[in-house]
Image (cartoon, rainbow, N blue to C red; front, side, top):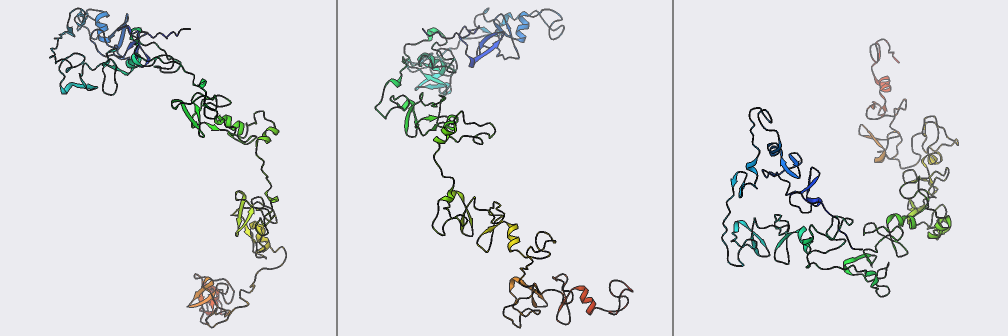
Length: 495
């Protein structure tokens, strides 16, 4: 069946085909952009000021002048209109007259043969010169031979007939023919061009060659069809050469590129969706959302057969003595290891010994028995006991035993020295020292001599007996006595 080109609308002004990139619509007709002008004053028009009348375009003024009402009282203002019909603007009535002015023909000095403008043959001066293949054109002559479109250095094409064309006319006259060439989209391509007489025998005739029929040697051709792959249609995937038309998803035949192609373990190519369905993880909780995923009709046996076998219980893989998990003795691999004091634990074994609460690096406490505990169990087992310790002041010891090493606030062992603590006589180290009148005390010994209240730099009072007191006890022992002193008059005694 012969190919029938799609007919394109013709411009009412010039009678040539109008394409989408250059069309202007007025009154249901399609005009070229260059033809969209007023028929009388030659003014360029747009959609806001054009008026169509019997396939002719006019600006609003010229349309009113030619077809509008005449006489006194019509138009823009009463008394200012005339009977002008715009006859003096019609270029057909007077030869060589445009807009009331006579156009005198311009005399062009002819240049010697082969030295002037290729279009008109006149001399070309530097100020108006346009170059194409080393030949100088007048700026007004530098136009497409077919559509008469004004050209510049970025859009002109030199034809094999030594003339110049715009890109569209060059492709239509000398370009490739047939389905797939010279169109905006693949569905709208055609072999006809603006007019049938523009067809040229100079264009190469391209035949549709099925390269899949040219079979290559075994292991060297396209993996899909086995044909020879040439450089113009080459697509690479894992070092294998594919035809561009064969580079499609194995399941859904979607055309692929280097971004969305996935190489499957069966040496085929898939799109990302089909690859995930066939080779990705299956079941509830995988991929885009956990609430609507399914296994696409696959049975559990099929899913299990496609997955490699992985032993989930690493505790059964015993490690050498002293090198495995302290809890179960199994080998600990990098993907599941948890560190605690240089020892590696399984992630599932890294829990509290007593309450079995799962732990992490923030919650784990290493006990003196080389095991791990949560903070609560560690405090119960190894923390201080008795009233006032723990999370609340009402906690008491669960076993009745006290873990306080110095119940009286004094060490039981250590070197005594004359420069030691004034209260206990033992040496005072920098981490626990408190200073009073150049004397150094233990932090636990820094309390009032009478009431044993803990002191600091804000409530310390040095007594004349060389001891330290709180403010109340200092006032009671060494302050003034009698009525009128102290907190209030008449309340003090001589005690």
